[in-house]
Image 1: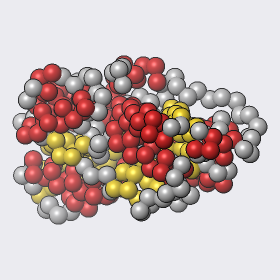
Image 2: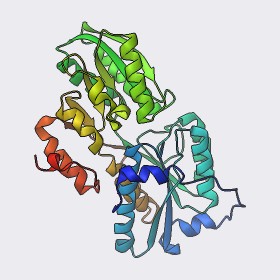
Image 3: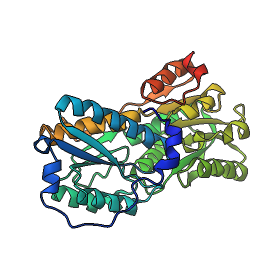
Length: 342
């Protein structure tokens, strides 16, 4: 938590490199899986180590692991096995790696549910508890999922954008990885909500590689191809992780509503380019994930329901300072001072 999440991107991209498989020890998972072994290793597999939201989740997971290690009088470790970029097949490999390395549990955001479901089921069959966050694999044997309701999230994005556009104009949907189930459902929600506004039309759904540079380039490309687009419904805030669009977009002509609100994105709120961001408390992906896994593995306690709901936080100029201070409390060290003083 002493290092900034921004700087962490540089070296985390190399984290979790593939290791050669080694013969599985049938006692490994059992020994690692609870207080009897006085150690629990939780493998954490986000979608991409280049995406700051997953670095924030890692920070939350490591903080929870430290706190619970002291409380439970055992060692709880978080093994970061997130691929450098989105790849469901690599995630499946990392699941198998975690099992072979003796992890007692796995916390994963599925990039492609179809590609990881088999690996999740194999891990569960070998005694490893698996929980998903952010993006679910609902047909797998994972014991719980923690995240927002993605259809409702998409609906909320469109509702806010329609207000900013006074219920009329052409909208483009920025959608990230086309294979990610959570993003597919958010796009569905945007489209469903848009039907309620006769004055709004949708130019299209635009997918891209989930890096800030690729996302910003896609926004610029679409704006050039569709100069009448007046609003962007972003089901993820990838292009706002770079400052590029601060100078390339005119808030008087075009509005953005996006999901997530990390420190680097806050200038877009201040300048009115993104008047509303719908923030996922991404730190809690890790914190709640680790807490839920410890309850399951150590105390044999299942969650009340297999789907644990995360509520969105609406961030605008009115609560920008409050949200900035919350981010700092979660360990973000790159929050601009001017927002902390608001």
